[in-house]
Image (cartoon, rainbow, N blue to C red):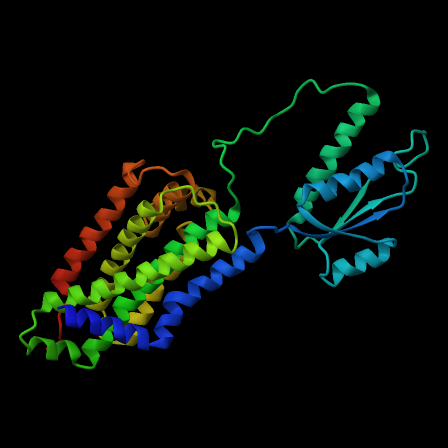
Length: 358
């Protein structure tokens, strides 16, 4: 069995196309989201056209700069700035008219925010400008607000959207590499009569299957380590959980999707059919199971179904362990769903999987 295990590892290492999809494809997602949402990133570029020389106008520009939410460039002409929006060089313009902030009846009282409707930056920009101007109004009127709200985070840990996505990309990588890797490879082995030849050798079938699983687990371990290292050390991802808990949880997820891969191989007659079935399983989960956004933002009827998909509970556990440092069994329902999927997949595989069609 160990010779088969080493042989499988060598074949995986020599298959450059397979290695690309297993290791480098998920890293592309990590780099893309890391560049947009990792360290030292902003929501987008804006221009500020300040025609006023008052203290309030200068304070607004300074406040926008200090938020570090936007990359700010200063312009003198509003029309030029609008043209830059049309050319997609910036996302919005804050136009401060002449004499804005001057305490006389005829001075302008509004700041104009010109934005690209295709960009979502305007909501954050409008909030930042509105918050500053509200404070300025209270200061000028020498009054204080009666009612207000305050933000109270559920945890004092600093978390970003990239931290959320990193756990999602990790689950996505395990799902794709395991379902497609196992399903397509075993179907190809059957198609090429390799599995049939195994039955004619002294090697027991379960040893062949176990060697295949263990070799995939090694690749998954490398995959997990690279994704976490890139996220942590290149893009300053916040990982508060114990790495010795995160990796075993992720490997359980890998085994979950390997089990589903065996179902794909059991139900597919050819490698092409396995490829299509694997994609039909993984692509909907990639968009619906919470890889890139929280599943609770889905319509209620869809959320009721989606929360039981194999990837959804795995991501909930991974995010809890990685971002909050909680136990994998903090919410037992998630673990129950995962192990139920494993049991069901293994039962189907045992019943339907054959080394040859004859």
